Length: 98
Image (cartoon, rainbow, N blue to C red):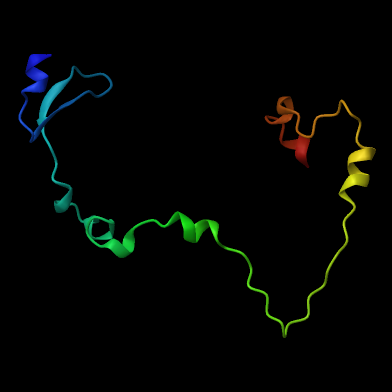
């Protein structure tokens, strides 16, 4: 444990399947060919979750839209109370959702 806490900052221990753990120098990500596409290299590449969530359709007042009325309560009443919406046993059966 003491050796791990005093290990040099530019070294790491790699543990790969089938091999014993070994000491290795760390890779400098700034040398990677795709580093320029990261947010660290350029702030405009940062992921913005708000842009992803806020994707509502902008309504154009000059465009004609068709509206449909849906009776969701009626469909729920037709369904048997004990009927599952998705039966997970059928997930492996490709014909189940055909």
